[in-house]
Length: 284
Ligand code: G1P
Image 1 (cartoon, rainbow, N blue to C red):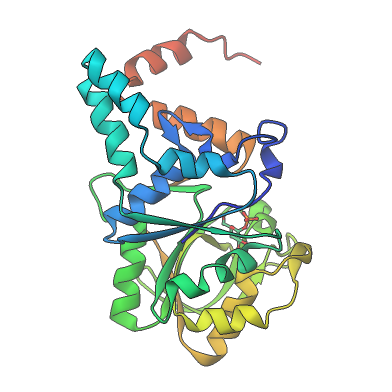
Image 2 (cartoon, rainbow, N blue to C red):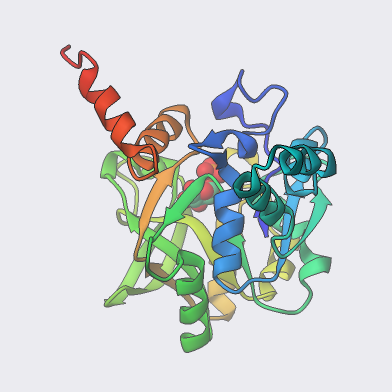
């Protein structure tokens, strides 16, 4: 499931009328990267949680017969193939979150569709790339299967940035796998239990839904997924996994700009982008 119902406050005014999830990263909307990662990880049923006014997300994944006919008439078969592939990606269901009460609340909206099965949560702000390797969500699924426990993606962050993330208190680490004692949402700098941050991928036991139902508002006055995962730890094992791959932060204006540059330098336009950057006067 992909939560995409927020106001996109970190991108205002750009996101006044359009959701941040459809802002482009090089050649496709931010959310498409996460959907592609889910599909590449073997997930066939995708749930996107949206809110009123977010219909651009639904439209993006819908078929576009007029556009397709126009591309066909022009003989632009490559673009036609790309456009068709988007609407043929897995089965996508949309669920509405009527009030923006937080990430935990958004996840709870998918309860009935998920049912009694483990499921993955992908925050599309965190663009996870692992070209040629195992997709990050697949890495977490593999850990869930091997250890029979909910598994969340971790990456070290600069200690000055801990208050932007959920931060774990590790007990023990073996290779990339981290046993966790506690989890704190957005701790103050200097009060964080470590520099290991939760990044936007989770593979969770369906037990999380019962816990979300009884989770009260936490950091920022929101119902936090982090708090429900902390409660889950009392009942079931929860692991962290220092994933293999690169994460781009497309959830802030500066992160999104950097992600565009970094990803453009890996794209088909890389030579031109590199030449353009070289031509800029970069002196202070
Ligand atoms: C959310 C989670 C946080 C996590 C972060 C990763 O925060 O609440 O625990 O570390 O995503 O990007 P948000 O970015 O929605 O404020």
